[in-house]
Image (cartoon, rainbow, N blue to C red; front, side, top):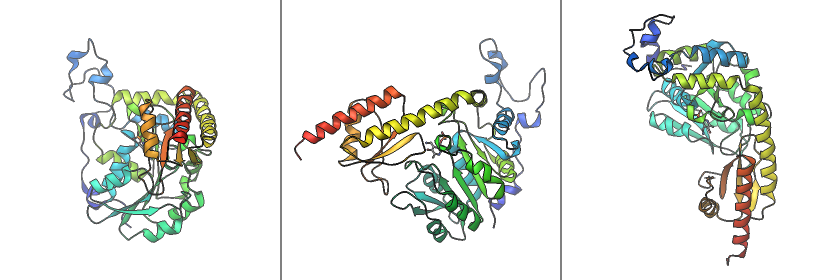
Length: 355
Ligand code: PMP
C-alpha cells in the first residue's frame, strides 16, 4: 500500500540558507537577516532558527531513549496532524478515519485538505471496538487517528484493540498522546513501537510540560516519515525561542513529574467532590488533565451560569454520546475549589427553582 502521496517523493527539497550552511561562522551574510538590530536584540531572534531542530530533537531523543532520526518537531502537534493529512491523502480520493467523539482537528483538517472522513462512533462507555474501525476502512484509507487518552472523554483505549488495528491496517496509525503524561502508563506505546512499521506517536509540550504558548509538538515515527517531513514542511516552522523553551523544559523533568502527580491527585479529589454534587449525574473516569462531567440538568445552562461567575469550562453537549456534559480542566487547587463551590451554589439554586 502507498503510504505517502507519490508526487512528494519527486520534489527536490527546498534548501533554505540554513540548510546549505550548517556549521559555525564568524559572519553570516547568507540569509538576508538584519544585524543592525544587534544592540537591542538577541542574536537568536534576528537570525533564522534551525530548520532541523537538531538540539531539541537530540534532547527529546535522549529523554525518550529513541534515535533522533525517529523524532520530528512541529509548531504544536496540530502542525503535525495537518502535515500528516497533506502528505498522505490525495484530495477527493483518499480518506482519514477518526473516531467520535474525539479531538475535532483531525476531521477539520482532513476536510480542509479535501480528504474523505470516515467516522467510527465509540461505544456508550467510550470504549473502542477494533471491528468497528476495521469495518469502516476502505482501500483508500491512509490514516487512522486514535487519541488516547481521548479528548474529550479522558479514557485510554485498550492496547489490545489498538494492536488489532495496527496489525490489520497497512496505512498509518497515529496515536495522539497529547494527554499521555497524565495517564497510568505514559510510555506503553513508546515501548511497543519497534514492533510496528506503521505506528506514529504524537506528543506535545502544551499540556504536561506547560508550554502551550510556545507551540511545540513532536512525533515519534519511522525514519521515512521523519525524512519526508523535514523535506516538505515549512522551512522555519519552529522559532528559536520555542525550540529553546522546549529544550529547557526537558531539564525540568523532576519538577514536571511532581506536578503530574499533583494534577493526578487533584483530578481524583475534584472527581470525588463532583460526584457528591446532586446536579452531577456522572463523572467519567479520566487519565487526562480534565474531567468530562454529565449533569442531570441542562449542561448548557450550567456552563452559562459558571461563565457568569467568571469560570470558563468547555460545553461538550453537542458532541455525539456527550449529551448534557461539560469538560473541565484540572486547574490549581484554588481554581478547582472555586469551580466546585460555584457548581455547588448553582446546584442549590437549580434545586430551588420551580421546574
Ligand atoms: N491533540 C489533542 C488530543 C489535543 O487536545 C490538542 C490540543 N487541544 C492537540 C493535539 C494539539 O496540541 P498542540 O498543537 O498544542 O500541541
